[in-house]
Image 1 (cartoon, rainbow, N blue to C red):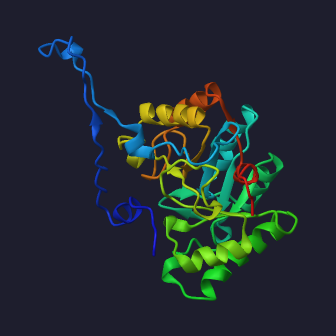
Image 2 (spheres, rainbow, N blue to C red):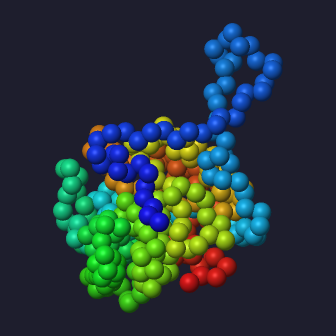
Image 3 (cartoon, one colour):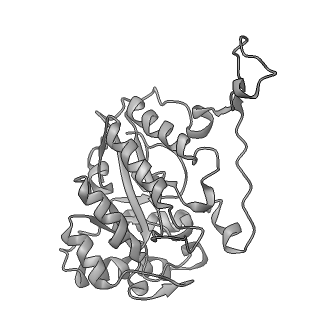
Amino acid sequence: MMHAFSWFLPVMFGCAPPDPVVEPIPNTDSGSDSGSDSDVVEPTPDLDALWGPEDTTTAPFTRGMVSFTFDDGWLGQATIASPKLVERGWKGTFYLVPEWFGTSMDGEAFMTLSGASDLVAAGHEIGDHTMSHATLTNLVEPEVFDEMADCQLSLESTLGLPPGAVANFSTPHGAYNDAVLADARLLFTSHRTGEARLNTPATDPYTLGGVLLEASNLDYPGRTPDDVEDVIQLTAERRSWLILVFHGFVEGELMRVTDQPLDAFDRILDEVAEADVDVVTIAEGVQRMPHPP
């Protein structure tokens, strides 16, 4: 079976992805005046419909957790997002692509090797996002394994990290299949997907859910600023693990649909700070699972 970000390919080919269909919670306030616009209550997405019902079959984590993860190695991750995390005493997980260091795409730059070194110096975790950002489901062995293993070796050697330090992986475009998972289990302690869901102690660490937040989906159910606030609170209440996924950060006008508006990012930081959750790297979250790899 192949998995991929449902939103990604339509964006790549220039057409907007369809809005997910979510049944709203009906307004049952019989005392409201239907003739007054000021009394109209906007439908609110059903959290269970968006994130699934609470898992009552296994004990939750001791505390809810939120992870900030960043894909591809965009320059703004090192110059904008990282300082905002460090200011709060938090660490993130940055999934990097060695072949993209010092290059650019659509006018937006990727970080240099020096920028990646700054992330390490700040205490962030470095993750594997393949050597060239290949769509792994389009490759055959040993190409799939080599994309992962070569990236891991390159990041550890060029960033001065000990063997095994790059221990967690995310697939480009969220595309994976059984062969990708088999290689991931050989090389890493986890694999983060692009599937929007909360993680529990029963989640397979090689199919961790990740919630993508970017300019192109700010009005999607589950991705609006209010919905993100709700899911952060839900994470605290259920004592589950929310993994947030970000791409580009730029000052001023956004350059790509995958960029993250800074005001929305700042609001997320504030909401996480106010919630009863721990901010953890992927490595730290995996260690809190009942049977870490």
